Image 1 (cartoon, rainbow, N blue to C red):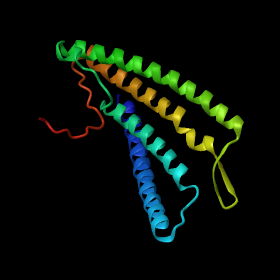
Image 2: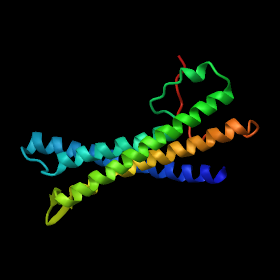
Image 3: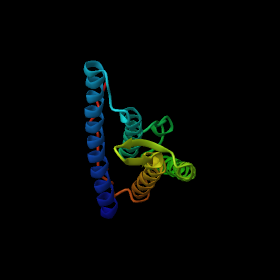
Image 4: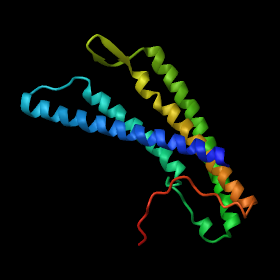
Length: 180
């Protein structure tokens, strides 16, 4: 179990650092773009498509973090009326189901990425450097693969809780919530 916690902790740190970095770049570039347009009547030609793809990256990485913290879209009507063990079994099944769906979506993402590579579309050009669009769309299959991995880890944790009641699993990260 410690190995799972370590892997999840390292992945969480990397994801959070990446989100902070990407958000900083987004804010800086968007602010610069507004100043250039409004004050100097110019702008950075590649900034808008780049910013759109950064939103995509932040969305997928954020979805992986939400999955890790079990803060994703969740219908827990059944779990409110059953025992803790049955709750864990329901969560095992839903996490496994969601993980399988994410595997299929990741596979579809790889197919999409292969299609984009064959088109050889350039998303942006900076000086003489051309950046293919597929580089920025790589997050689609990778993001779904990350979420699938997170769902699998959650299914394992709930399995340990359900079938070994003495081994209460401490989840690696909790986001404070406001109780109403």
